[in-house]
Amino acid sequence: MTDSDPTDGVADSIRRTLRSVLDGHPVSFAMVFGSAARGSMDDRSDVDVAVEFDDHRPGDDGYSDVYLRLVSDVDGVLPTDVDVVDVHSMPPQFAWVAFDDGDVIVGSDSRRRELEREVAGDSPSRRDARARIAAAAERLREGPS
Image (cartoon, rainbow, N blue to C red; front, side, top):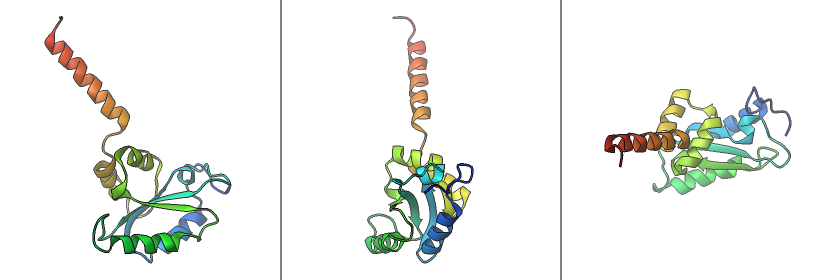
């Protein structure tokens, strides 16, 4: 798929198609991430979609049915594979990368920021920098050996 423009993020046709499918499901937030969001899709690319359901979280009764219905409806609507992941099941480092280049298609940017803080936390580089600074400060407090 070469109709993506890096300045545009996900091609408008992909956005419209996904929104129309997501509108029929209890999804309060969705974003496309990965190559589709970066505008770097090629013939082998899939479309990665992160979602948050209105009232269902992984492990809740009925969650599997809601999730599988969405995956089934999304599967096949685009000329490429689509991977759907619940934001609440993402490991923090994976979530950080997804939110870093994600393109919101359902919901608000403020909800994106809330979810990013909740699920991804600090970026690995920020966290590492804080740990290095704390270790250096501790060495300074201890003084020369």
